[in-house]
Image 1 (cartoon, rainbow, N blue to C red):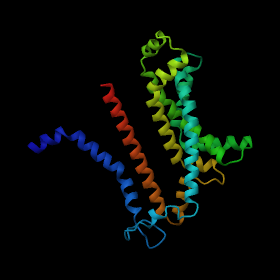
Image 2: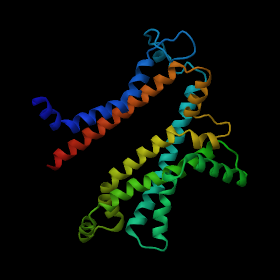
Image 3: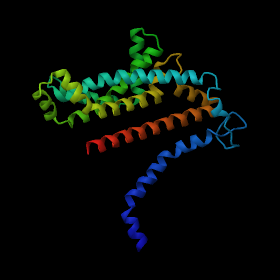
Image 4: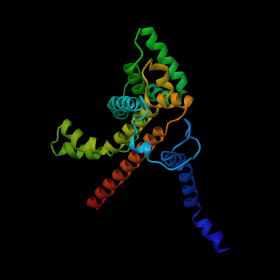
Length: 266
């Protein structure tokens, strides 16, 4: 009976931990197999422990070049989508204009539309324009499909902002630019940061849209897909583990900074 009562009290926590463990299981497998030394080309069964792949993460020809290209595209796509998405979000929340409702509805289309449909549509557009498939077509495509996610994240933050704070700044003789920089932007910053991180992750991880519009350009997801056809090198697991660790560290640092700010305010 005591166990049943304990289970009822902690059911939500247990369910949350099990779900988190289920989500992290692939990352654990990738991390474990980054220390594997397979006998053949395929890194699918555990053979023996080795740190050779960690000592030479760029040992596979072309892998680090594709990784650098993916990071470059993701960075520029994040900057472009975040800048445009932030302006669109503020316009949709703060201003009234014709077709505002239609624009609000259209923002959701890239999120609801299957990626293969968007990829084929973009490819058709680029071919009709006579554009050469490569870095720039991939970058434009990534900005387009990341834009909606940034708008949604920033829009939610802007809608929750208290307009009286900006009015107070204006009462203290702050101009429009000062009010935006010192009041509006800091309050909206968490939503902008969330949208930027989401855009970066989506751009770096994308395969379908990139595969349609890349031409001869090879990004990291495309390199991984191509490698899987002839044997997955251990270095791919190394890069995946490193990216996961960096993301976790970034989240932990953000949480620590947020908690420190809360203590200062309190």
